[in-house]
Length: 193
Image (cartoon, rainbow, N blue to C red; front, side, top):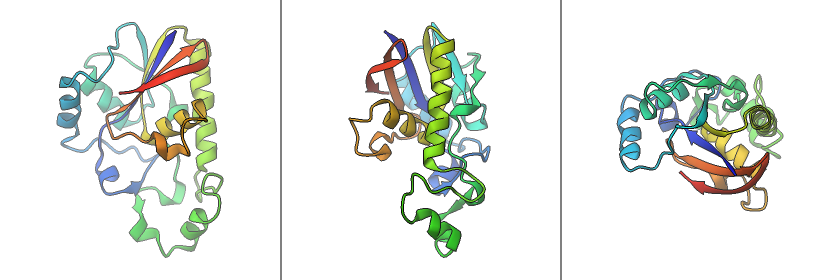
């Protein structure tokens, strides 16, 4: 069995302010390093030894990698980036609630509705699944991936469709994630990080 460790990046000011952000290349919050280091002291993170390491190439994922695994080199896999919120990037509910485009986006099937200038949750999930499948085909050993909350939830929902009612079942706090066991490219189990 091989392992894939999916770790959500540390906290950002945008996440704390409950803003939509995906393609915006925001840094970690000033105190995120201490939060991540406290989790590391608790011993929750897997070793990077023997793993191929990836980030999405966004500042927040690269910073998280350097804090948790100083000096470890990573490759970039942009296909695992967060959902692109298009015109809603770096904006929150209070600012958007009266915007007709935002109201349309929230109405009906929120998984299929496309953010103006961005993508839908369904498109995001499909992109992430393709990217992970590519890594699983190309890389033969264990993987450690520093990515995003939406990426983790989308992948877990698709990998384990019978375990959760929806993607929010899989949501983890910043700095946390899952280890998934694979037999080749077939998911066989998971545990929380």
